[in-house]
Image (cartoon, rainbow, N blue to C red; front, top):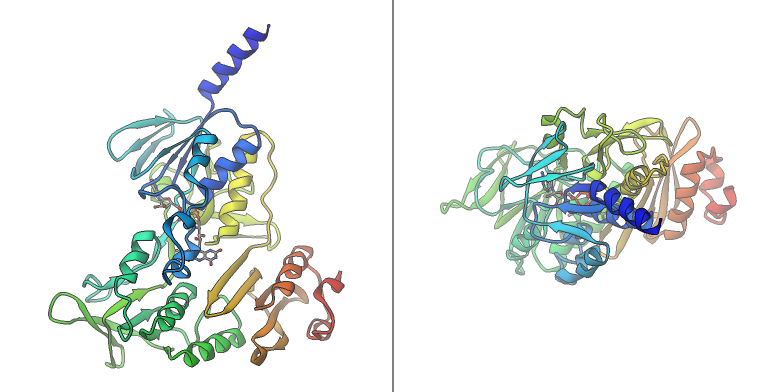
Length: 419
Ligand code: FAD
C-alpha cells in the first residue's frame, strides 16, 4: 500500500510542474509561496538576465551610491533555490508559448513543458524617441548593468541631466548630488512626482533637492539631444532652445509592461496582462503576476497596474495559493516607498481621483503626512519620515474609514485612535 502511494506520488510529481517566465521579485516569491504551501511538483524559473532574482529598489539608492554589494541585492541566497528544488535557467529569453502543447520555447530553441505557467515578466523603461536619443551616454535604470553603467560616469563635477522628475529620476538625483555631481532635472509637468503625490509633497521635494544643489526645471519640453562631436551626448536641448550641458543623461519617464509574449500567445492584454483576483489569465493554466499585470483591486473597485515590490510579492503569493488549490483573492492596500537623501517617503494606498487633502504635521519639520480623501473616504496617505502614520494608514485605507478632516489634521491624535 505504501509503495503504491509513493508510486502515485512520483507519477503526480512528474506531471506537476510550474514554469515561471522572468526571474525577478515575483518569481522569487512564487517559489517560496509554492513550497510553503507544500507544492511538490517541479519548479523552473527562466530569466533573461544573468542573475538570480534580485531587488531593484536599491539600484537607484544604495547600489548606485556604492553602499551595497551585488550579493546583498539578491532576494534569496543562491542555496535557497537548491533547497527549494527550483531549477534556474538564466540568461535565457522565452520567445514563445504554445498553449496547446503547454510548452515554452527558449531563445536557443529548447522547449520546456509546463502544467502551470506563470508570467512574471515585469516592465521595462519607457524610452525617449527624440533626435539624438541613440547617442552614447544616455541611460535608463532597470537592471544591475544599468546601475553599473551609470556609476561609471560618477565623478565630482560631472554634469548629469535627468529627464523625468519621477521617483527614479529623483532618487538618482539625490545619490548623484551627494556624490558631488552637477545635477539638472528636466520635468515636463508643472511639478515633480506630479502623477502620484499632492502639490505640497512635490514642493517639499523640490525644496530639498534645491538645498542639495540640484537644478529642478519644470514645464520643460525636450527638443533633441546634441552630439558632443564624438557620437556621445553633450547637451540636452529644450523646446525653448535652451541648452543644458550634459556629460551623461539618465531618463526616467515611466515603465512599459512586458506583455508581448502574452499578447502573441493570444492572452488578453490591456496596459498589462489581464488577470483576475487569483492572478489567472483567460487561460486556466497560465497566471501572471507583478509589474506586467492589469488586475482588479478590491479596495478601489477598479483595475490597476502597479510597479511595486508589494504588488509583485502579494500577487505572487495569490498565484501560488491558486495553483496549490487554496485560492484566496488578492485584495491588498498598495504601498510603496522612496528614499531621497535622509528622507523616507512611504505611500499607503492610491491617491488618484482624490478631492481633498489634509496636511498632518509641518513640512518644515520634515516629519509630516498628507491624507487624501474622496467622498469623505480615506483613499491614501503619503507619510514623510513618519513610519507610525504609514503603518496605521495601511489599515485605515483597507477599512475605508471616513475620518473627520479636523481630527486627522491634529497630530496630537494618533491615527490608530480613528478605529
Ligand atoms: P522584475 O523584478 O522586473 O522581473 C521581471 C524579470 O523578467 C526581468 O528580469 C526581465 O528581464 C525578465 N523577463 C521579461 N521577459 C522575459 C522573457 N520573455 N523571458 C525571460 N525573462 C524575461 N518598488 C517599490 O515598491 N519601492 C521602490 O523603492 C522601488 N524602487 C525601484 C527602483 C528602480 C530603479 C526600479 C527599476 C524599480 C523600483 N521599484 C520599486 C519597482 C520594483 O522593483 C518592481 O515593482 C518589481 O521589481 C517588480 O517585480 P516583477 O517580478 O514583476 O518584475
